[in-house]
Every structure is written in structure tokens, then in C-alpha cells.
Image (cartoon, rainbow, N blue to C red):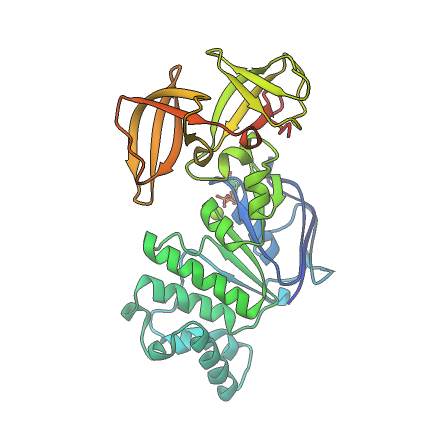
Length: 357
Ligand SMILES: Nc1ncnc2c1ncn2[C@@H]1O[C@H](COP(=O)(O)OP(=O)(O)O)[C@@H](O)[C@H]1O
Ligand SMILES: [Mg+2]
């Protein structure tokens, strides 16, 4: 196992810069997710760590040693991709043991390590099958097995679950989590899916256009998003945003006025001055239906998911989403009143996008 450190790493393809001065320290044994929208540079960054892509500027260190000039093989990493890339003519056991065989291990060593990895991944009964005789989930498990048998210092995953259907994705996600809990190998996991990042990672690095927006634990990002980008990216359904202006303070109390005149109480610790133009952020799960009518509007859409129902209501022409208990009665085109707790209102400076909490 090993730590991984990125020090002021940049990448350009010719004139086009795609990664801008990224620095992150990943501890030995940590599971870190790189998350961000498609095209933000996640794969490029991972491939630079793997040695599949030149580093334009900065250093990548694995176990405190700069590896910029080392080949992928010399870095002692294993990578799992979205496409499984298994050899179709080889059995599961042969696929899993191929790299060990190349590395000159004896037949006994190879079969012992393959058997051990197969047991960990519940593949023991499938070792003699060919990839064509496996389901998508089983193939992805073999691809992981092939990575595990090499006992690498670092696992790199690039959207490994994107090709699986929704149910299998959730199942494989928990298998990856349990595997990490068992073997504890330092892991870097690229995904565009914030739920995957939240559920798997010890820490998340949020990337946008080749830059880091925020680094933190899943709950830090959820509770204290540093800016509008992270606030809108983490959480599902996404945070609601409303434009407002800070009202004159009354003692310790802070409040903001929406365009329609509604006054919303803010957390007293909000760093705001009267007259400042802000964007308020309200998570759907914090808009609870109640007697207090902090926000009122007509219900425009109802989406039941079972345990919960997503309610879209309209507030002076703007759609807002609230999450209510699945048993809570809601009717289309009737009024919806939401109570808003001041400590659950996020406040962002509209000109910089930065959080003021
Ligand atoms: N070989 C390349 N030449 C030029 N541009 C590239 C190349 N590979 C990737 N890019 C660009 O770099 C950016 C980041 O790509 P990528 O790392 O694949 O994003 P992600 O994995 O987050 O979807 C994109 O704008 C992409 O078009
Ligand atoms: Mg990618």
C-alpha cells in the first residue's frame, strides 16, 4: 500500500490546457473519489497517475517517490476501466492470472493467487468459464480480480460501473466498498456520479473544468459546500437556488428578501452585509411541509419514489423541489407550504459564487 501525492500537476494537449495546477495528498489506505461532469479532466488525471499520459507540469509521487518518469508497470498500480477488456479465448482463471504469468510467477503461485482473489470476489465456481459465458456484472468482477491478483500498491478505477444496469451498479458498488474495507489498498475512483462518490469514498475531490472546486469527506461537501458549483453538484435531487438581497440586520438576526418580497431567516453566523446580492441554496429534503409558510407555491408536479415523494412547486414563476414522506398527501395544483430552518439555508455571494457560511 502507498500514499499518492499530486503536486501542482497540469496537463495540456498542445495549446489546450485541460488540467490546471492540481495538488492533492491521498493517504495510505484511503479511498478517494474524483468526481465532476463529463469532460472535466478526471480520466486525464487518473491516466497521469497511472503513467498512461505524460505530465506537462508538476509531480506525481507514489509512496513519497516521484514517478513522473516511470512506466505504468514500474508504478505498481492496477487499473480497472469501464470496458472490461477480457481476453475472449481465455478462461476466467487464465484472464486473472495472465499478468502474473507474464511477470514470471510459477504455475503454483499463479493458481494460488488466482484462487485467493476468486474467493474474495465470489468467482470460484466460474474459473473455467469463458467471458462470453458470464453476465456483465461477473465480467466486471473478473476485471477487478485481474487487478487484485497483482496485489498493487494503488487501485485506480475509471468509471468501472457505467456499463452495468442500475441494480447491478448498486450491488457492485457495495462489493467494491466491502473489498476496500477488507484489503485496505489505497484507491482512486473516477466517476461522474455523485451518489457513487458519496457512498464509496472516504474523501471526494470535486473537479470542474480541470480545476479543484473542493476536497472533503462526503458529509463535509454535503453540509458545507464551498461554492455554488459543489452545492449544485452534490445531492439529489439537486439543491434549489433562489436569488435574494440581504435585509438590514435586527440584532443578531440575519435575513434575506426574495424577489417576491418573501423574507427568509438565515443562520446568524452568515457573513453577510445588508444590500448584498446573494443566492440562497435550499436542499429539497430541507423544505418540509408545515404550518409555517416560509415558502408557498402551487404544486406543479408530483413524483412518487415510494418511501418519499418529490414535489415540484412554483414560487413566483420558479420551480422548487421539495421531498416529502411518501405517505404525505399532495395534490396537483393545490398550495404547498414549506417551512425553512435558518441553519439549513446556504448563502452564496452572487458575484463570486462562494459560500458565506
Ligand atoms: N488526447 C487528447 N487530445 C486533446 N484533448 C484531449 C485528449 N484527451 C482528452 N482531451 C480533452 O481533455 C478534457 C478532459 O477529458 P477527460 O479527462 O477524458 O474528461 P472526463 O474523464 O472528466 O470526462 C476534455 O475536454 C477532452 O476533450
Ligand atoms: Mg473519463
